[in-house]
Length: 411
Image 1 (spheres, rainbow, N blue to C red):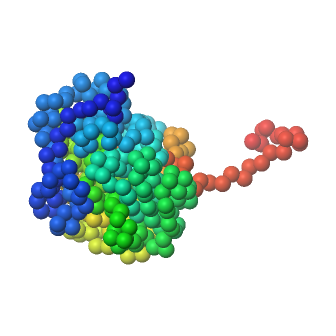
Image 2 (cartoon, one colour):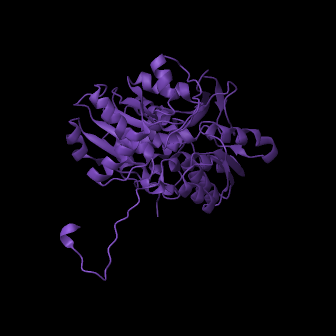
Image 3 (spheres, rainbow, N blue to C red):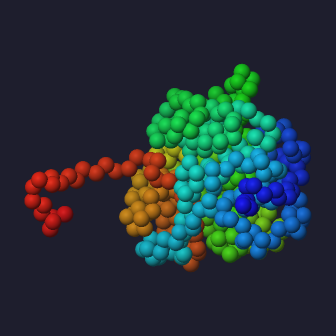
């Protein structure tokens, strides 16, 4: 049986590049950050890639993340660590769209991936590359979903995993991390405090630091969101993309995907305006965007119910801001109250259960539509990054006594 994960396919990685200085680094060697302390980006021979693959050949492949193998860094099929990463659906939400009086509105539902979140994309590729490069032990800080994905893929790969999360991370996710085979600790701090524990423990534990953007390959996995979106839209793109932004890997990855697709001529020069969505209680990217700064200041006293966006300081801040500005987009913050209301509104109107971070994109879209930052004729895609089933939901207190007559008219 021919599959995207078993067939050998040509690979096109040429080198890695410092995202700040442009300095080159060799491929096929284990790397963390660049010498400048910034994320490394994978570079490809795109001309050779374009000669080896066309859209028709791609369309005939099974519909999963690994159909984009030529755009990914894993050299040998034997090193691919997969849990069945299906393409995620783009769901039109016309009832909400017409209610708001905007253009075509879609939700890309990443909650359908293994471990129930888009973190499966990034960690699936990062762990595959760790396996290829001989890593035996990995560690990461997490707000929940990245840890769950790291645990699952490491277990699948036969790699040990250590995960550190803020003590108030969602219970379901902490349990999931443990059940998937990682060693997990609750920490009395935020995700950056957990990250310090991982960094400080490298010498003592000999683990590879798989923190957001501290290795080069999570971006490549998240890049598949952009490749998939382009293919699903018939190789054109929506006008605006609303993306929940904490560490911002997906924003950076999608922008990279669009650049690569443009360079090989699969899409035209038009790009979506990229909108970084943050929570009002933790909005360093919004503040930096509004100030015209290239880097964000650490956010004091970060708090929000959207744990995935509670990232006080992002190592890729300048890359997020670059994508936003180059695309003519913007950064926007929404309150926890607006997130809660958005989650309920989408569930009641369209039957889609969003995670808090995904609901934040709908709250941001409503806000941007009303203040004119998004036009009423513009098409928009909102990213729901995880299944809503992992998060607390309203309690239900309606009871019926089956031994008594039921007053159906009052139901």
